[in-house]
Image (cartoon, rainbow, N blue to C red):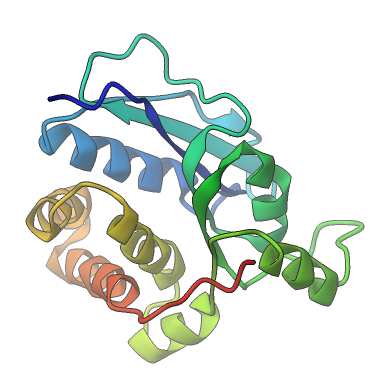
Length: 199
C-alpha cells in the first residue's frame, strides 16, 4: 500500500554554496526512484553571501504543491550553521538535521560560533559535520555540500546506484575529474559513522 504522507526536505545556505544544485540533484534522484517530487523556487538572494533556501516535497502519491509547512520537514540540509538555525523550525519533532560546522562569518552581526553550535546541539537529530576538514582530506575545496548530501542520503529512499547516476550526469559536462571528485565527496559523507549530537 502506498504511503500517502508528504515528506519534506529543506536545503539552506548562502549564495554561492550550491543550494540550487543540491536541490536539483535531490529532486532528480527522488523522481528516478519512482516517487512524485516537486521543488519550490529558490528563496532568498542568489548572489554570494545572501541567505538562500529551497524545499523539496516527495510522496508515493501525486503532489499539488512543493511548499512545506513549519514543523513538517523530515530533513534539513544546511550548508552553513547560522542558516541551519534560521530554518530549524521547519523540522518535524523526529526530523534529521545535517549541517556543516563551517561558518560564512563575513556577514555583519554574526553571533559567537560557540553559541551557534550550542543551539544546534540542542536540536534533536542534529548531525554536525566538519566539512572543512573533510574537504582538506579529499583535496577538493568544494566537497562540503556533496559530503552533507552523502550523509543526508541515508535518510532518503534512494539507492546508491541512483545517486551515483544522477551525480555523474549532473557534473559530467564539467569533465570526468569533476564528476569523480563530487562522487568521492558524496561517498565520503555517506560513509561517515555519525551519531546525532542533538538531544
